[in-house]
Length: 113
Length: 111
Image 1 (cartoon, rainbow over the protein chains, first blue to last red):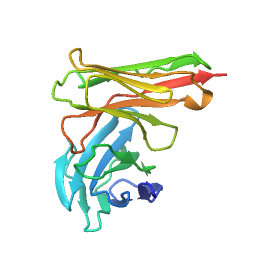
Image 2: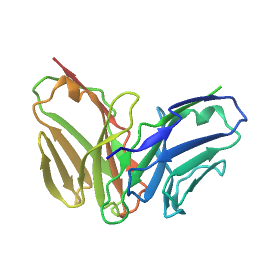
Image 3: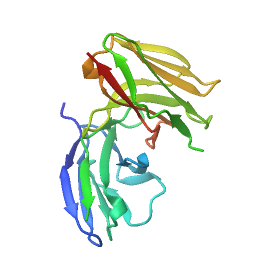
């Protein structure tokens, strides 16, 4: 079974721009979560989607948003980029409620200049 | 105070030694506990998952949970240089996502 895939793997943007990151979960998985990883703050939860509905949201400003499509693929968007948004953005998928484990993708490394 | 505390290390051990890692947490609502391994520039890889107090063994890995003390541990037996990575503890309160991570401990296994 293919793992979680994320595109693009690397991205360079400038302050004020917006960016969209994509995540394809493991086949059959219906829950997708997004995390931000930085050296200073570690791994922090952004939001979780299940069946196209946002289930949980972390403590991030409204510039961070996401959505999930009917095929479970998910996108996250960051608008008006700031230097502090430079991070590794990780997507994790989970089958649903039958089992509880999350599997991570390789991440998208975003650099904001 | 962070909900999950984990010593960032680095922890350096000789090949063949036992690696001992631990996390403490303050939120008694955490029910599900995981250990992930993350190599540089890669996504976290699930190593162990448990939801009850006690020990769980999988090959060279043993996860231990003590809910009364709010303390979890991971032991790696017969450590190898390929075990050099950052080990992250993670936990959550229900079966949905929203994992709360520790800071991660960098482990270096020297030949």
